[in-house]
Length: 81
Image 1 (cartoon, rainbow, N blue to C red):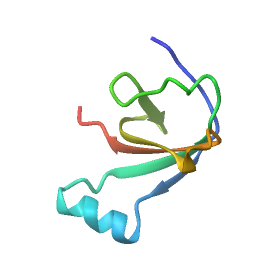
Image 2: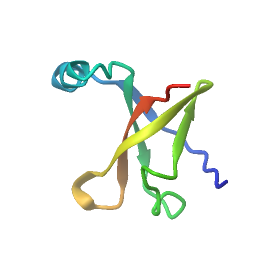
Image 3: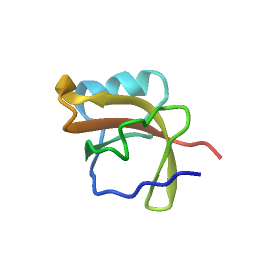
Image 4: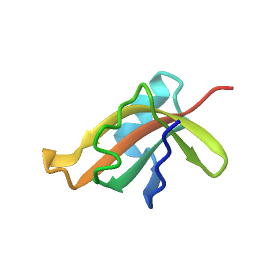
């Protein structure tokens, strides 16, 4: 298992994002914004999870914002146990 620890801005979905998620009963969605670095360059939604405040989140989508390799926005859903 490969583990990366980094600082992140974390926020719940809001506005249009929240209502789109609510349509599919995915109100437990959250997003994380992190800096791009070599440790996360190969990150994918299949092999990586996020541990935040003792809860595990599945990655739904990784957005390399503006394709500049500077900031990643990680869309995640609370994992069902």
